[in-house]
Image 1: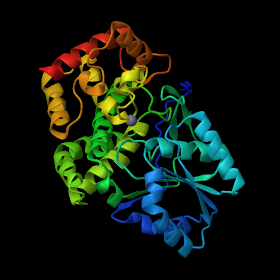
Image 2: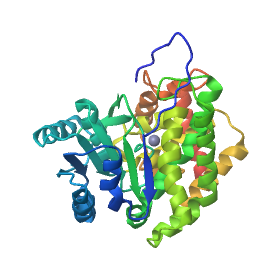
Image 3: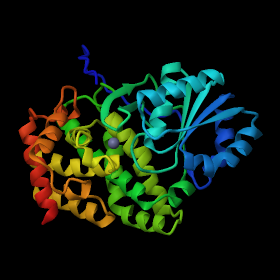
Length: 371
Ligand SMILES: [Zn+2]
């Protein structure tokens, strides 16, 4: 991550050019592309399950607008080799737009391919599992899933289109993980604002970003549990629509234009522990948020509110619940070291953050979660 020091402090807010959400939204994909003046050909990079669910709808919707497309099935990790394969596919079909359809890593890959080729990019998340779809950055991992680096782009996506029918029919764990990512948004933005630090766009936060982060928080507390119940029975309800918007749009703008702090650094640290690789981004961020609040010395009442939210919707509150039931000392030390690496967002805190502070925060958060 770069940390340029500009001569003047400028507020910066970034957002997708267009955001579309609702039941059966995929049917409108072709019309939305035409509306934006995107005529194809398109390369669709999609998870295997999404190809199965949507191939017919894409044919009908893009076909109706005369937009040619090819599909490439996503391999599962946003790694350099996966990005390279996407670049080859895009060049060979002469794509003018890259459409990512699937989970966060699939969309990250689509953005990386489009960014490299300077093409328009459309994100169609099939899950509301992370804050990534609206952003102008990707997280690149090694082929075996260890956090490697961020990629930053000039622009946010041209279009983010969320089909809530897919979200409602996905395993509930993904929606819950998205709430874990989203519940951190307000607290991380608050820290960045208090510290007069930069957001993820290397600018200061706007009032708008702060307000979106607060609305994200309020929406999660109000509708999180009802949305969980809706997905358990595959129902698209107003509460689910609001949580999808909180997880995707409010958290997406909130983290990027509001900024990140310890919670996401602890997530990045945890990727250094093999045992956590089966855990989702938002599940690790949720635990990282508890660490952040402990390290920041926040009032116990605030920490208790977050713990209660986590427990009510089913987010992890202990190391055991993120795959580290019996972590070795070297494992935890590696996590803490990784969390404070140069350029990590832990350094957006208004005080110096060290590995021993993070280690103590991890152990203390785990103890709070267990009691
Ligand atoms: Zn996140």
